[in-house]
Length: 474
Image (cartoon, rainbow, N blue to C red):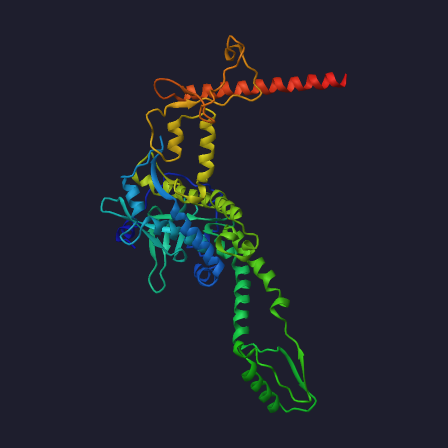
């Protein structure tokens, strides 16, 4: 906790806004009191993130994949990236022990486990923000105010006196709780019930392997057994057949003893159905397609195309909106500390799931070149090749096989012009567009002309076919 933050909290700062009187209305006895979450952050971490394999896998996948995007500072007017801006340096190195990856990853983990991620702004002697440090969400409580919504936070570390932190010295990103505007709703809290079922099923299997006996059932005898004899038989049976190491041993019974199976097998208990139900619900709450984290409910229908589509959907429908929420809070609460006209954004150019398949790009570029849509050098650039001296040329599109010879194509002797027999197979004439490389306007004009010619050709063919059909019917 920064000393400067504690000192500054003594003097109230004037508010630049007036909160809604209805939205901030509350009972008088709650004014100036801290708020506490209904379900703890610590149980979510211990029982969910730290104990349930699927919850951990989903949160870790989201946190790690976020590193593929880079948080950048841009100029609002033109989107120019400001690589040397002090805010960019702060984001890249929030404190001496953390990097941008740690900043984004920890924010993601806090959002899933607590519904809020809180960072303290550590200021220099001049009041500039020079460091960001994470705060435990369950120890940080908003101090409510009926007029200004919130004036400060109380940071209560167990065993220490609470510390008051001014609201402007805390950067908070949260998932809103519609029943409590001061609180948050964590996805792990929502998934806690189904996670408890999943954890209990795992515990049951473990206990069965440790203490179960095969066969599972009831031993009965025609003799009247005393309590001591019953306990002795039960103990010897457990010692002889208890545990998975003794399950394969055959059981030996006396002549007057019988066995009746009472327990259910794993198949009869329906563990496959329970697992699929739990996996589907946990992945739905945490917004991660099951196939991406190796969940059985996703692998049952896994193909390469399904995996690629799931990766793209994960980013487009879930991860990008999550990153946008973080960027918006950083712009509002942090970028404003560094002046006006700047914003925090994300560079998604290196995210593999959002990149178009190279084969598709090359195929499209090849077709565009063959049809005269792009020059040779533009095609070579897409292929990752260097430009060539004669590359600023368009390839003439191949003539339509249905096109009729024109007067310009017919010689004086009535023969049509054809390529010489010794011409390279498939060769087409190269047409020089201009002395210099064509501009976009020239290219668009050529494309529109080609589109008009093709439209006219197919319209004429359609009319000709209609005439033939009418003539035949007559």
